[in-house]
Image (cartoon, rainbow, N blue to C red; front, side, top):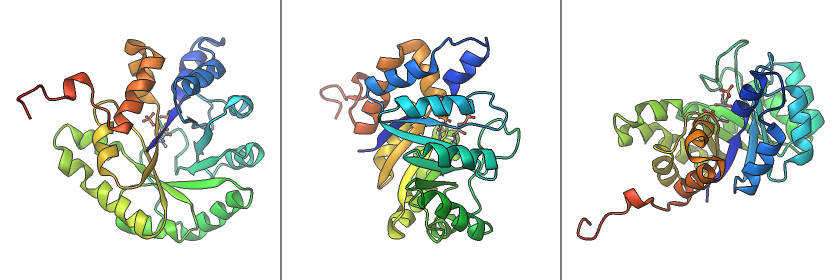
Length: 252
Ligand SMILES: CC(=O)[C@@H](O)[C@H](O)COP(=O)(O)O
Ligand SMILES: NCC(=O)COP(=O)(O)O
């Protein structure tokens, strides 16, 4: 079954808006795990506008599930952070400085030499590596040549097109996932996944090991509460239908 890693960036963003410790990031991370999340994701950025480097060190001591650190390995501070903490997984994302949020995957062809050296640096320390990529066959194939363990498919394109037509929105992702299987890459996915689009993605993408979800999940928690929200996302991943999705008798 696909595992759910909760990205807690938005909790830090809310906390930072007032300068104190409310909400308490470490408590939220512990609670996410207690409510069933199988991993915690953070994505520190150089300006530390949400997750701070100090948060990542503090989380290392309390996360008991999979710890996934995402970020830009072209920043030496990020590389040092990850090598010091040694999380279960590092996800390398080609962010530009000052970027609002991640908006593209690696060009794994143009950056093959750089990525091969960087992947090795982390793998030599026992850290699983995942590369953030767009759903393009040639990018997935070249990713495999860097020695990375996994890729994370950037799902913003899927999420945007989902409401216009499910089949068309997922087609490139299915192809990319099939390619990943062919070249023996583990498969993660993330960005803008939510309660509406998650189940269809998880049902149709072969070999999907993990999704990391932050923005929508934390927003949903305002309405449903964190525990219920996490249960709802887990249900989407396990194929359990909600009451509204179960056809009434005679409708089948
Ligand atoms: C790589 C990715 O898609 C996520 O990590 C996303 O970028 C979250 O980062 P923000 O919370 O800064 O939007
Ligand atoms: N890797 C994707 C992630 O961690 C969360 O992205 P989003 O759900 O905040 O868009």
